[in-house]
Amino acid sequence: MSVAEGLSDLLLSRVRDVPDHPKPGIVFKDITPLLADPEAFGALTEALAATARELGATKVVGLEARGFILGAPVALAAGAGFVPVRKAGKLPGATLSQSYDLEYGSAEIEIHAEDLADDDRVLIVDDVLATGGTAEAAIGLVRRTKATLVGLAVLMELGFLPGGERVRLALGEVPYQALVTV
Ligand SMILES: O=P(O)(O)OC[C@H]1O[C@H](OP(=O)(O)OP(=O)(O)O)[C@H](O)[C@@H]1O
Ligand SMILES: Nc1ncnc2[nH]cnc12
Image (cartoon, rainbow, N blue to C red; front, side, top):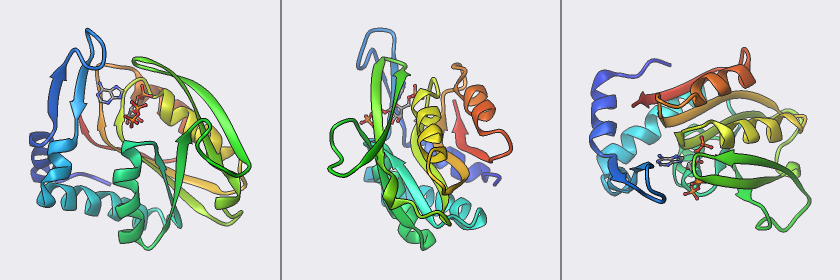
């Protein structure tokens, strides 16, 4: 699951730093320029889909909201299904839910457990790993189902925060991939 230097450079060049958003002191990593560039968005999708294929994923779980934008095309490209993890109160069916803290607040996420079959192999996909709280909560949700968690893949890890260490601890032997670390 190594990442070609050219790909890292392309992806990094399309992420915009927005200082003091959404709160003073936060440097927001804005992926909208990357999404607007079909070459970069396509390369990102293909890189994450290659990971999904390598891990034999049958479902991609995407984390609201930016994880939906990345996860849905990755699922299709890898021949897997897509399952959304949503902020609390949005999913209409029976849910599993988990609270967690963010770099700039706190939140609760939910999943329709019935969307994951017992024999599913699940790759969790998101855009940014910051404190790791969201990903850790999603790992917890998937592990409360009978499906098998096979990996966590993100576009970008904020290396100045302890999120990478936190999710590695939570994942144990399960692979973790950040395409770029800043
Ligand atoms: O590692 P963490 O500290 O948990 O932060 C990372 C999460 O924060 C952002 O989502 P956000 O909750 O802002 O939602 P959005 O995708 O709807 O903007 C980002 O898309 C990740 O899901
Ligand atoms: N600094 C940041 N930029 C973009 N998304 C984030 N999610 C959590 N922290 C973030």
